[in-house]
Image (cartoon, rainbow, N blue to C red):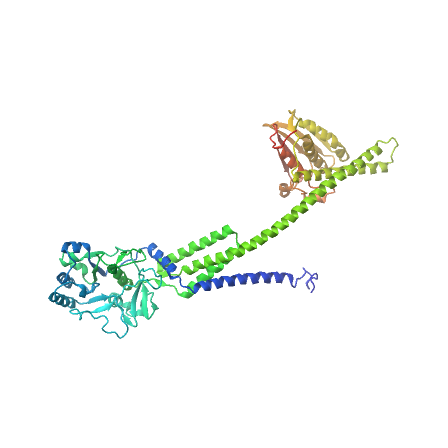
Length: 636
């Protein structure tokens, strides 16, 4: 079917190529943009950005409410008060006193974070200490080392403590892996199938984690199973002073049925402290509190659950596509607001998931996808915008030239037309005043010629005035004039138009003082309003022209009994070249410039012009002029 042929149904013409090609092109570019966005997202997803991700994780840890503690863990610290009271670091005899007190307390487990081999004392005292420790119901020595599978003697202590149970309970830090910032965030559950100390102790209180697969947040890394620690701020767990416990100055019932951790907090060595998500200070948290956090994480089974990689990729792709769409289709301000809202909203979403459910979704990759997509496509957007601006500039330049040519042509044509029109009018006057009588047909022809030439002259004058306005050459030549006198002159001049329709022009003028105005321009305004009233009034009707002075302004009204103007057309009647539907359908001719020029001339005098009209009830045009001219134009 050809382009200009109609379809079988006989309706609109069917286009086989033009519209589908345009639609296909848009679809192609949309898919291309989505493809670029997905490529950026998938590229970003290939990298872990552990350091940035760790920062977001730490922020969520700090902002979320503090997790509850199980109440099953107690701490005993060799603190500065202990050293001060004893005058030294506790020796073997001091530790024996501590253990004897704990035996009677009914503690379920005692864990030494201090290597007994480092305790000072005589050989006999150390042997006695070893016996006291061995007599505890459940005693463990937490060692930092991690043994390979098959190394049965890896944790064996030096004599006389070789029979004590030592288990791996390392404190991890992201020193060379993951974030690489030396912050402790993880704990080892097992290595090469050998379970570490913490799950062994914690399952006494939570049998549900006996099988490692039931531990929340479990992930595998380099032959080890690990979880992230559910951290509480430093100071959450109260430390009991070693000195007070050894001297039995505490209530030992406080330790009954609990895990008792014994360690140091005297700030003599960095190995007794760790950096945490709450603080990167060297002494941010004691290893005592760290192990308490690790035990409670397992007892409560509350380890943060990291989202799967595919979910991070999904969010990264989604946000990347959104960024590309925003950059290439929306206005910059609105686009930045949407992207800013997306960043804030995604952060709040991740925060709420972490707060309410302990779920850790990745943020580094989505945020980097926003950054990369934005700065990758912004230059492309700028190239497009610059090309469009250049095209608009060229079109505007061409239109400006065309407008100048049009204005110059109209001005030249109008000036050249006035001379032959004046000659035609002069010749018609000569024929009318000739003493030789004319036939009725000749007289009618001369009248028609005179009327037509006057209409043409009015049109040419309107075009000239429009050209002067658009070229900003219009100036006021102010003189003191009585508006009543100007109106009288206009009414006398236009009576010849009213007589054929038997229209009566009634003038009701109040005495007025002279007003500073441009007589020629205001004469055109009054002529236009009264002439329009005559043109659009029915035969045997009246036109009322009134003047009065009110509140320092001269008010002139021209009211007719014509057909009126529809309400929906009233806002447009002062627009350039606008003619109402009823005016277009009538035999009355017009250029659509009269009211536009009238409004411009009145406002040039710092006045106002308005209309009140109802369909079928006539129209009233009101002109208000200040009694003292406030125009900014120069007068002469």
